[in-house]
Length: 457
Ligand code: ADP
Ligand code: ASP
Ligand code: MG
Image (cartoon, rainbow, N blue to C red):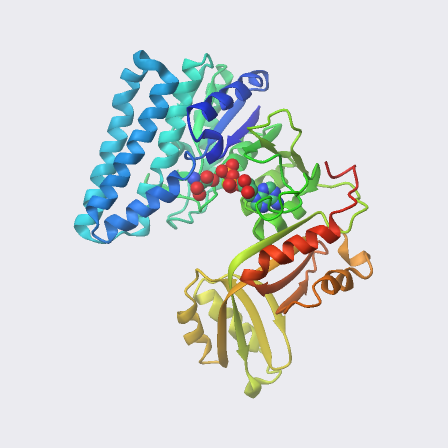
């Protein structure tokens, strides 16, 4: 069997869903399981709604809910035609009634907890998966809707819930495998799960890729196809460099590094379950389905070029911890990292000198609280609006002069931190956030001119 995951833009309206059905129809022999995201922008709207309700703005929340209902009804009726839609209407209606009630409840309490946020957010995938399953049936694909909450078992860390792989695999074997055996195409939402008590959770933004990989790993898929709106993993973000080129083959490690440092095309954790089982992952374009896309494998072939891709992660804050008193004191770094750990703040890049340590963290984290804690150990300063730029390529350590080439190109720029990881596959540095487009464009022009045809399209 194979897993086919379709992202938000791939299911954004009736036309897109028909395209998806055509793509799936051509692959029925490979026994697909389909995982879908919410329709484009729906998760954002749901989160806005939850926040509005939590702030007591009941009318705003309910108005957004009506608009969402219209959009889903319109898509479903266009796909199903009047006769089929009449039956389906009440099913969607019941979901919107629940959502409506939930929003009223949240605004009555005047507070939205992570747990209720997940409940609201889950509607995106619940609705899209029902519509896609119904559309498949209407278009002649023998499909079955699977409620993700029945199969994706997670812990209870709402909004960032951690999938429990063993339990999930068991459920998938019980629920999904028999459907495949009967020749049906199971359709389920990504991103959503439930804890052991059956309470709805979500596994983090962009998490549908991860759901797809978990399903693929649990059911020993031959491949996992991530269908999106670009031709594959490109040499950089096409919104910054419209001339970004497609990477034909990339290693798991390189793809994970890129995803982690901002290449939105893939969720960072996606690749892990697939790596463990050695299942190839493809990134493909639902708007251009004949394009070969990008193949992600354990080992990428040797390439003539230094780098495979550039990514940038914005909204970064640099935290400087300076401690002359503690000069070289044994245990100082441990104390610093313990503080980060207590506040559950993840660190991306670290650089140290004798008297100070600089670390980068995501600006969305609770930095003031962390800084107050660190201030007990040392002098602390922090500065936001930074970005991490990451150049990825296999075996960088063996290639002489790489740093000189990169920083020579950026000689007029203020570079804040530099790190060339032990993993040998990335060169990472920190710049001002507003310089990201220019820096990426310049580096892309320098390093992605004469490309090895074995690896780049
Ligand atoms: P989906 O909804 O299918 O999950 P996403 O919006 O999450 O799609 O990811 C696809 C988008 O990622 C592309 O439209 C593109 O703008 C962006 N992107 C950023 N970096 C890259 C890259 N290196 N290669 C391809 N796409 C990238
Ligand atoms: N719909 C979710 C989000 O927008 C999950 C996903 O699309 O992968 O984050
Ligand atoms: Mg995505």
